[in-house]
Image (cartoon, rainbow, N blue to C red; front, side, top):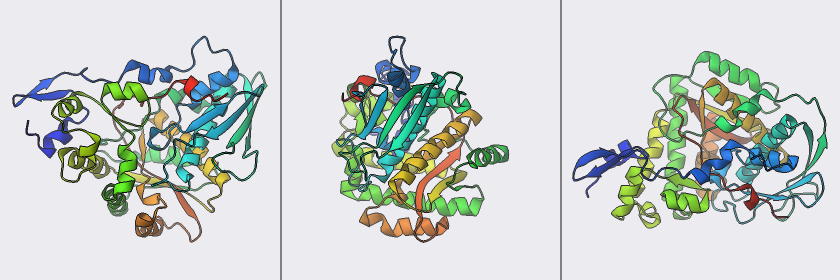
Length: 381
């Protein structure tokens, strides 16, 4: 079966299989397994512990590579100890675990929202055992019953939150939506910038593309992503994490041996080229970029960035705005140093400050939810 890069890109994730040169629609072939996304319904009726109910919502938080690097200790009454799962880190692309802790900030923000919606105040104490290392907790969260707590209006968006990785629609960001996102973020101490001027967007696009090229052409960093790619419904169901590739085209490529981890690691193959083209098509469709920077890079600040970012994404969800993070040019490994410096210059991030989050904004259809592991897999005690 000879498949072109153009054909691969056109049907990646879609409902088409090529059979004897003809396109055949098979929309449910190799679909997302229902069990992998059941968590998006929230806690079941059997969950009566308010901590577990809040955790069932918190595990829907955005996180790097969808690793879901959360580990939870419930051994103390009315308390959650939140840890990092040391087996779910990104040592090549995130050597200082900055992005991992931002993901934990997203988790804590949704956890607090969910607790309040259930009538509990969640009091978060960061790094209760001192300076964080992977063997120490990120946070201790005490639950106290407090009837009458206001429900955060963004909480309703948690099960609707998505990250669109493909093309955005060919229309500019609505100025009213841009203004609403900036206004909603205004209470945060972390500056938010959104750029939609064409020349500036093009400069940022070139930097983002260059960062993706560096990551894909550096074998150890590219392999870190490929190691968590789940190819096909069976792998997705078995792992319920990582980067999902599914659908009729993926099924067809697997049948002919063209979609394997080894193929995806090899430049020039259909899998490698098609994956690159898919990522680049997303960047090409961007009409706006945004970023969040901080004056320092303390661990507490990284948590605060995550809490602010997930609120921004939930606000975007409420407006119908798609938002996808781009992490490559912000990463702290040696091969990315020059591009990271260039991104700091382009975003006018001051010397000594840290560009924490960079993302594209636009409009897209619902790509569907990403897999989530069962709540029981996060609980260590």
